[in-house]
Image (cartoon, rainbow, N blue to C red; front, side, top):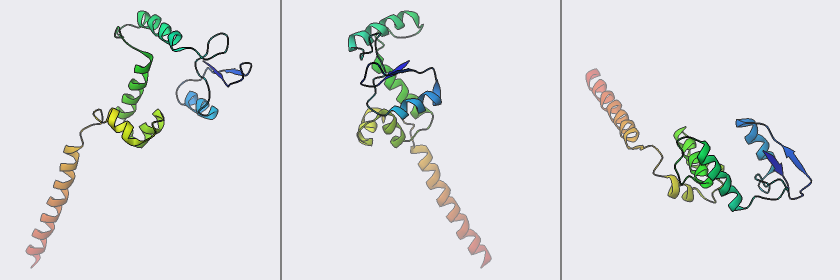
Length: 138
C-alpha cells in the first residue's frame, strides 16, 4: 500500500499489517488518499470496481456481486462479533453519530434480552434469599 498526501511527490510505501498498519494510517489523519494509481492520483471508483472484479475471480467463495463497499460492512460485522460497543464501531467507521451505526448495524449486535433477564433474575433471587435468611434468624 502506498500512502499519499495531496502532494503527489510525497509518498510512503507501507508494508505493515494489522494493528501496526492501523496505527500508521491513524498517524496520517483523515485527509490522506489511501488508494492511488501509478500516477499518484486517487483511484477513480471505476478503477476500484475493476480491481474488485479481478479479485472476485481470484478469491474463492466471494459472491458475484461483491463490492469494495462490502468490505466496510464486513469490517463492521467483525468488530461487532468481537464484542466492540456501538461507540467504538461508530469511531472506526467514522459515522457522524451512534444512531447511524445502530440504524445500519443494530440487527447484527447480539440479542441482550436473555442477559438482562438473567441479571434481573439474579438480583431478585438474591433479595429473596436475603429475606428468607432474615426471617430464619428471627
